[in-house]
Length: 75
Length: 228
Image (cartoon, rainbow over all chains, first blue to last red; front, side, top):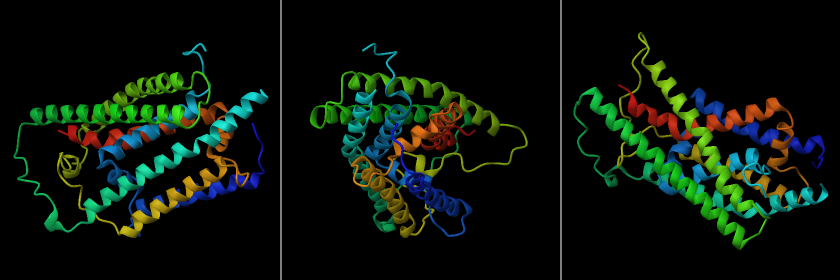
């Protein structure tokens, strides 16, 4: 596994921190901003958007939990 | 081992194209949804008369049928879209190695098979909890935005709020793109996840998070249809 300086991971922490902070503001209903579920609801109004979300979810599952396993494939 | 590392890095870099395609599909879908939400009321299609009172059993049966149809079409459509993208990626962008296509087809099917019983159990549990005596009355029986052909709930937020989400997700995708392109030498999201998944607890937590996200996004809200 490649090693990166710890500081490089901090960008990801900041980005996800911003996402969670924005979602927190939305859930606290203090600013009138939409929650992420509102965004997904907008996307899901369109069948293609709904399918893209499912595809993204499935792909993420495959990418993180399945990729590299061969017990079903016997390559 | 060295070859495997090179293959993984190469595969990560080539993932740039489908990742960008994903963003470019999701954002227009969001824009279309917002257009429907924000267009003037006069141009909205008439939702028609509200459904009259009907026996609870009949409502529940139609709710179950609607839920089954919705979930089936969503899962099948999403699965087929993913396979189409993967096949196009494999033959059009990069032949990333033997077994890739089979792994995608069978692996994602396996994930659906794993998630389905969890979702069914979670749905059953959620229904049981809602029907517990003494619980206060919940939201309306069938939210308007879940009925086919009707517009979403009128809870409007400032457009800038949605734009902020688009920018935040855009920043995530852009940073991931830079990492995959190896422009900046920063770790990709996969590298971050790999660090977490080195430990069993991290793996379990991530898998639980993945399942929860699927249930939350695709199933939970539709359970309101089954409210009696």
